Image (cartoon, rainbow, N blue to C red; front, top):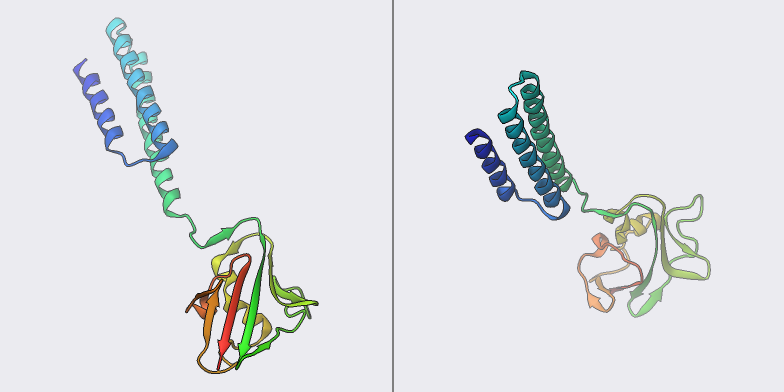
Length: 194
């Protein structure tokens, strides 16, 4: 009887010390409660019956349960570690950003249909709205897919070739990320050169 009580205290202590969050903690608590019930049931059966088969079945069940609980807790921990922070969307996206390029006070337009001639690039402009960058990505989209520098690659231009002392604002605020800036929907990007 004291072995069962010690085992119950051990599993209760493991549950309290586990660093789990949300539903994982609830599953682990339910699992420990079920294990406690199994141990008490085994203790009652052992007290009333001296059948070796029942003892083996109960002991096997408890061992399998403990192993399954360990595998579950380990797999939950691994899932949290492998989350992809660079993932923006798994189902594609359709963003628009306004790009203004000002060289010595004069606006330079992006040619219409940039990224559409000879194929359909996910980053492109349309006829009639040349300075709107369309970002139309199917499937998985990562943050680096949305970098401003990627659009300049599509355009086949070096964004630093327009002049000296490049300055950039995004939505009215100074930004120094330049080609590494990750564009977002409805951004207003302005590049100024002297």
